[in-house]
Amino acid sequence: MRKSLALVSLSLGIAFINSIWSAVAQVSIPLPVPTNSQVQPPVQPKPRIPNIQPSRVLKPLNLGNNCTPRHACLGWDEQLWNQIGKSGGGDRLALLASIDNSLSYLSRKSAIAAYQKYPVKGITHDRVRRSLIRFRELVVNSKSPEELQAAVRREFTFYQSVGHDGQGTVKFTAYYEPIYNASRVRTEEYKYPLYRVPPDLAQWAKPHPKRVDLEGKDGLLGERSQLSGLEILWFRDRFDAYMVHIQGSAQIQLSDGTKTSIGFAGGTDYPWTSIGGQLSKDGKLAANQLSMPGIINFFQSQPQEMNNYLPRWERFVFFQETAGRPATGSINVPVTAERSIATDKSLMPPGALALVHTSIPYPTSNGQMQYRTVSRFVLDQDTGSAIKGPGRVDYFMGSGKVAGDRAGVTGGKGSLYYLLLKR
Image (cartoon, rainbow, N blue to C red; front, top):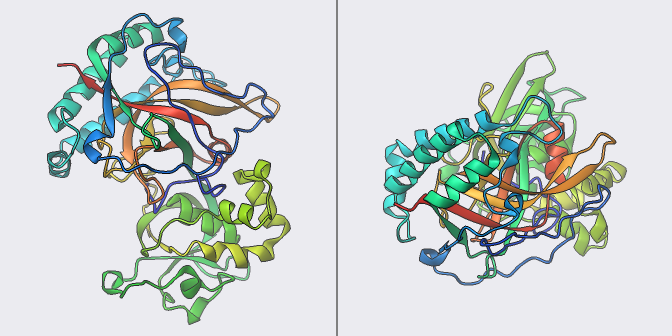
């Protein structure tokens, strides 16, 4: 769905308030995870990305078998059997579907070509494919988190990302697919458009027009825009339309009662600029307000400030209607809630099995968020223009409001591993 970038994290320059922490995998790996549901993850300074050779971004580890307690060790994924806050068991079927999506990708010529150029020694197309097939068998046949963990640690090599500091520290953010109201026609209520790809976009001279040139400071340039006639949908809320630019796809409830969906189709050539970071720099928001809810509250209370801040992200995103197709990653397969991640695909193996160790928020019965440390098997199926270097992961939360609420306050430091069969 990799949109032009994947952050729900308008919040900081480091996405929103996210970041997670790297660790040594042989023993229990404690994380600085808040236990009080009122507490938000700490705001972290933007890390410096070291000059790391692509062939050295992943390092194999010798985990050993002496990690205790087992539930605190890498590979303990209890959500497969029991989803926190939900009835009806775990999400094994979701993980199996995500594995099948990666296997579908790996069957394509584009995947074979991508791995012919992959720089890390020992990580090949054949090994990634065989690893997924074997892991799928283990997921189907294992009866408990402990059984799956033991089998994976016995049969697979864990390749750890060196992170943004060369020491394994990875910064995590989360993204989601929003559901918005929109109209196919412009009205007094629905007046903020999204646009199709200009047919001559590939011939546009660089530097490309900036966001402000294409939609105006107030987002209402309309017929005066060079994009006039390419409108695909209109939104009531300007910030909703802007959020779709960030997320790159959305499910749409149309004003006539029907539904559709839209997805990323192209964009102008400008880097990511964090609006949250800009608000912080200008003293508009304090550090403890740099979450998605904090940013939304700011613009709701001071909507005129959108004219100042939204144009600062100069990139402009174009869309196509996808007729209800689920959110789709950069390798052109559906992304799965809490089982798909986005990374820098110039460095990380596309479609591969990975494991993340991080802090994830879960809603509680009193409407708050409680953070829990997770060790979660995921598939690397997406990317984004803001996801650069070996120290960045964007975690797909799913679709809808709850997913958005969780994504907006996800955060902490953590670690990322890729799992390949030992032989």
